[in-house]
Structure formats: C-alpha cells, structure tokens
Length: 486
Image 1 (cartoon, rainbow, N blue to C red):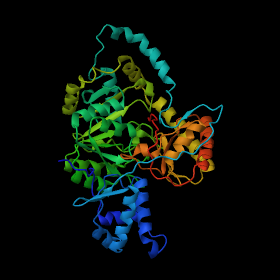
Image 2: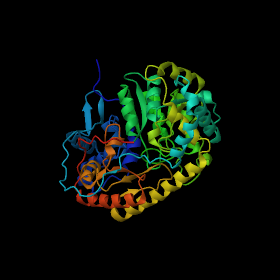
Image 3: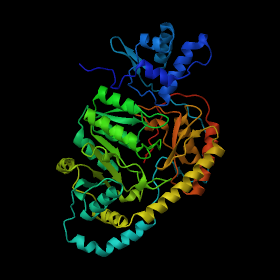
Image 4: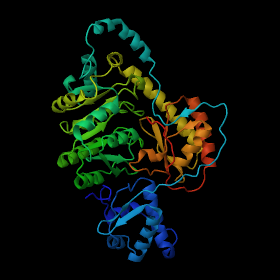
C-alpha cells in the first residue's frame, strides 16, 4: 500500500521558529493570520519546500510560544489555500496548490527583438573559430580511425586533468570521461547511482534542467533550502539521515541560481557529512571557471579534494567557452569511471570527435581567453545591476562574485506574472518557480548578464515597465511557460 504523504524531511519546532523570526505584525487579535502569512511566505520563498513535514501543533505552541488554538487556526487557513495538507496519523506537511494565473493584458512592443533572459549562456569565445581552423589541419590523422572514444579523446582528457591539478586536485586522464555536455554527464551519473523511486538530495532552489533529469529517471528530488548566506549544512546533514538519498546533487561554485560559493571549510564539512552518511556527492562545476572577482586557481579547492573517493565532479565547456561545442566531462575515481563506461554504451558510444579536438586546442593555453571572458562578464554584470537599481528600485539582490546571473528578490510574489507579461515586451524569462522542486519562489527571478551592455540596458528598461504594470499578490500559478532554460 503506497502512502499519499510526499517524501521530505521533517522540520523541528525550534528550527521553524527561527525561520519565522519576528512573525507578529498586528498584535494578538490577528495572531493566527500573521502566523499563516509568515508560513506562507516561507513556502513562496522556497524556504519550506513541498513535502516538508511540520511539527505537531503542541510542539509549535510551545516554541513560538502561543496557544494551540492560534496554531490550529493558522494551519486551517493554510489548508484552505492548499499550502498545507494533513492526514490523521501522518501529521501535516507543506503542499502546493495549482490554479489559474490572471495574466495582465498588454500590447506587444513593436520593433524589439526577443531578449533571452531564460538561458544563462554567453556567445562563443573569440578563439573558438581559430581553434576550428587549427583542428582542420590535423583532422585527417583522425579520419583514418574509427572515431569512437568511450572515454574521450586522449588529448582532451589529459588537458582537463591538468586543469584540475592546477586547481589543487591531482588528477590523471584515467579519471576523466568526456561527455556531450554537463547534462549528459548528469544523466549518466543518475543512471549509475539511482533507480526508480530512489531519492536524490538537491539544493532548493536548484538548476531546473538538473531537476528535470532527476525526475526523468523516476528518482525523487529531496530539497534542502538554501539560506540567505548559502548552504544549510546542518539541514543537509538532517536530510541525509532522514531521507537516506542514494546521491546528492550540489553546485558549490557560484550556485545556480543564487550565485553563492561554498568556502573551503564548508566544503570540508559537507564532504565529512556525506562520508558519514555514505552518500555520493555529485558536484556540478559548470561555472567554476567564471570567478569574476578573483582567480579560479586561487579559489577554494574542488570538493573532491576533501573526499576524492566519494565525489563525482561534472564539468562543461558550455559556459566558459561555448554551448555549441556540447562537450562536458565527468571526473571520478577509477572504479566509478569503469562503471560509467560499462553502462554508457546503452546511451551512446562517445562524444563528437571534432568538438573534443577544438576544446583540447582551447585548453592548450586556457588562461588568456578565460581571463577575457571573465572581464567581459564582470562588466556586463555591473551594467545589469546598475539598470536594476534604476528601473526596478524595489527589487533586492546580491552582487554575484561569479557565475552568469543575478538572483533578484521581488517586492511581491509575482515572478510568473512578470514572466508572462514580459513576453509581450520582447523578454523571455524563466520564472522563479522553475528553480524549485515543487514550484514556489514566486518572489524571485534569475536574470543572466550574458548579453552585450547595450542589450542589457534596453532589456532592463523594458523589464522596469513590466514590473510597474504587474501588481497584486497572486500566489502560485500553473501557467503554461514552456521556456527552455540554460
């Protein structure tokens, strides 16, 4: 007999009280409404993911402290909204309603091309074309071969390994498997570690395509909410104990979408936590090279430095060089590499040789081009933030030290409404709900700074018009926004 209670960790009364903070707004007479509003905002912000089991009413009444009558009234209000579900004998847990989005009618702006703010992917580095020309000279040597490399072209694997070694993680080419992008690398890893019904710990929010990949193999993502300053390491430890996931997927370098970066001490603690739980850590380093305020070689060492046998690292050239190359890789122990290759042939027989040779050429002396890429992105980041301060002054955001986007906190839970209306203004957006395991994040919006400064200035001006036109406090919606995200 299956249970209709969704999987998820339980939050203690003490921890929920800390998240609620100063939740009273209007005195004792409105206590239940204020408490319901505070819990509702934690759900909308993704701090209480769907499936999170709530403390018993008695426990909540003791830690807040308030009467049980007030707790019951607040939960009844949230149940009526579909944000809390209950079952006798199983307690109460966070749920998510579905509904119809009231779209604000608008008139499309004429003469504007569509600005893609859904894909955080820059154009190709200037050196990519020259690398193709260089590869063409010695490509005939490869044409005489069969062209199948399950592990990847040896020259590229060697240069990827050298880059890890330069970052403080000694690596041999035998520990590298070249894939057709990081998404392909994640799919191979999920196929290796998980099966239908297995649980995968993820950050909340997280990268939408990674969440889709987890669900595609019929695994169950178990979210742990990020904090205002980064990772909730005690929360991760609790989730590993309670949910017993088969693996964890994390982005510790300029997290997508929050842009947080886990320091060396935090990485050591996370690795130790995973080791005690015997949970493999799959670490996505897609934007590790995009340190806009420093040098990636002097940043925190890769997470595998702290638990080499337990960590599987995913990398990609999509953000650093060009998404059109479709080249990624997996760095893992020799034993995991052997298992990956054994199962890979059911999906593919290797990645495109020409693209691998081009990336190998680019990695022969990577620093000059990457330094130029970082400087360009840093300038575009500053242009975007300046435009947001001018045209969306009520939005709040942190200055990202790296990565490709700014994670904006809106002044109302209207992210999906803004994304819908923005299409009429020539802007394609991914609403905040795309970054949550079960939606939410209606107060948040990810804005990439991969466009040219002129395009960014115009797009943010248009976005300011959209923000001014979208009012109200629509909660959660089920709008049809099938926008590709990268």
